[in-house]
Length: 100
Image (cartoon, rainbow, N blue to C red; front, side, top):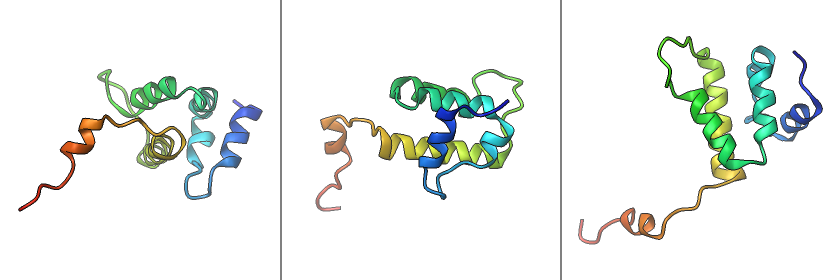
């Protein structure tokens, strides 16, 4: 399976430390789907979760190197590309308490 222009453009836009190498080579269908959903945060967040969480027993899963590439890409996407909005209360609960 070949990578369409959309997936190639996405890969070229990523810094070398973020750019997956084995994922597009060994799992081009997954890379194509990530590129297709890149501008749809809710869809891509769910897709990353489906890829990285074992919700169906008996799946082989990804090789560790590919799983690390996926995890790195997911973290970058959710932190820098489309950061999740935090709840006001979450900030309050994570403040260090005084006197401790």
